[in-house]
Image 1 (cartoon, chains in turn blue, red):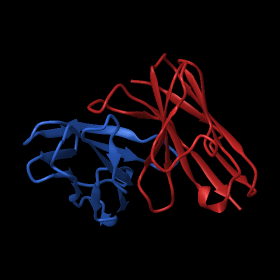
Image 2 (cartoon, helix red, strand yellow):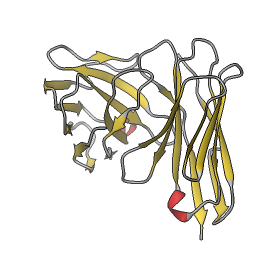
Image 3 (cartoon, helix red, strand yellow):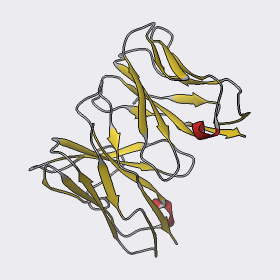
Image 4 (tube, chains in turn blue, purple):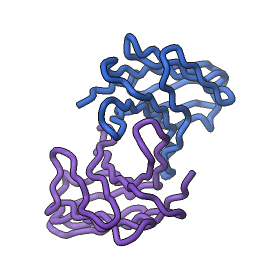
Length: 111
Length: 114
């Protein structure tokens, strides 16, 4: 069973601040790392899927990096906006077919 | 991508009763998945539902407690049976092709058991 850990558990920032979260996962038998954004009362929305060590992905003001050798991924948000407020989930796929999720980081951006 | 709807979006139930959650996908998919997120916990896979065969349950989940139906390639139901307050969770269905592929989720069913 994979153990996927996310930190911090929650985060409050001011509009315009840049922020980042961490996802750590077992580096052995790694296949893919996923980031999702989950707004209240909505479906979790896929942000990125990364498979290769050193991968970097970007979507607007949000970017992510991947280090499979040490087992961590960072998600960065540049110039946070109130609409970025959500829970950010990461999930790691190892030898099993289905990703294992972390508990998420809850981000609140204050105007 | 896939668009997924779930019913009901939320419910408050009495202990000892059962609730059936419906999941409808806008396209035909082979595999559908049911997850649960208890308060403060991670999304946890309950079972994988394949059309035409019995669902495959993850460790800690049993068919008697969480019976699943998959009558066709666009629809599935999850029943939470003989509910207790510990079953209070968000239940989500999802579809996906494999470990490296994106999962598409429904909006979830927020269940509170009194």
